Figure 1 (cartoon, each protein chain N blue to C red):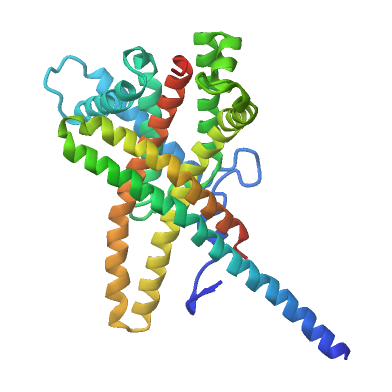
Figure 2 (figure 1 turned 30 degrees about the vertical axis):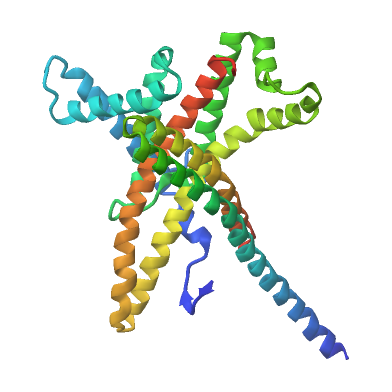
Length: 87
Length: 255
């Protein structure tokens, strides 16, 4: 009986590690979905406006980098959580 | 740590370097500190040399590098975000751009291959400097009450919504901004370094065991090195342009 309990305890310890790893991986993956779609939207619209008005390309590019930077912050927070949870 | 049956070093081994001199004291110097020192020296050397040899109308060599750098920051950062009255922040923004660029670019310099900004200390310090500057500029341009009013109560919002908008603006302007600025730079550099390390270890392990498949991760490594050069320049640019946006935002009241 004690033997089984001890085994269960070590397994629980390993399980916590494993669950941490799963959580870290899932956390980063989920955090990347929204920003992925968002950056796609930002860049796609920037390209279509650059194609429509090539003379405003400089201004559009600056604003596009700003939009990317703000959108990307969410993915990076997910990455930070991933690093923090890593066993 | 074991990833895909590869012996992968723990994350701390990739980012924590032993002290080289003055070990244990407050002035301990390690690889990260040396890279920052090199970045400061290179930045100063470029601009001091370029400033000394004034007079040549056609810029050559170092003068050309400095002039196109200043021009780039003026054209695509200051003029696009603050406008002509932001020209007095040009020296600060240019210095910061080149300092961040040089401390990032050591990520791909053979033999060193460590982005100094993947340690949090200097990014957060730079971000706090930026925080102090844009708040100071805002208070000086609009007065303390006016600055607080404009940043906490953006005009054109229905009265009842201020209950939600004001706390959000308070947190996002005065708390989250410096952290997101620092984390953006730091996390990009950490991610790039991890990516390069992963492909390098994969290449070495396959090569050591005599698999010809080592060519695949090696070509990926070369591709990613090129990508990381782009990321280094882009992150320096984004840090500078966000600083300019924050300064410009506190200079003019929101419309």
